[in-house]
Length: 175
Image (cartoon, rainbow, N blue to C red):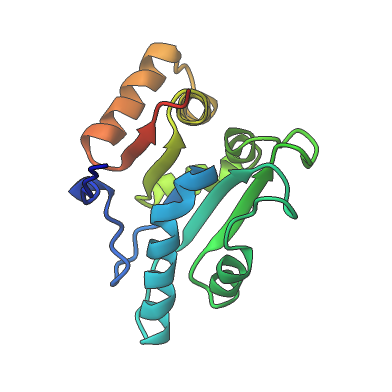
């Protein structure tokens, strides 16, 4: 068997050494992997006295007692102020919140405020269902907060975030 390891795209690297721009991380399942390192880096930077902008991590899995990967580690980072965790549990939903895109929609005002403050959005995980759902949640967010905006305007807005490096995906096609 042959394998090769490739570093992630430069655009997907989350700077945890400082800066005030908010960070919005969105993951499902194993898509959490790159964010685990970024959150640990943020916790270390905070412990060293760095001032960081807010970070929110929307994370989807089946159930809190089944596959909430690295829960203790992530909760410790949240307690330290490195991140605000926003899980979505598909098998044990909270009201209408079953998937990460539902949680983003439920917290639309906060997400919009983070975007207005210059947030960078990173999406990692399933590219066949989760990522399209998250893109739609962001387009809906734009339409809701932009009077007269239609689907075309929302698509152009999201394309602009992508072009500016403020909406970055590292997704895979699930079978």
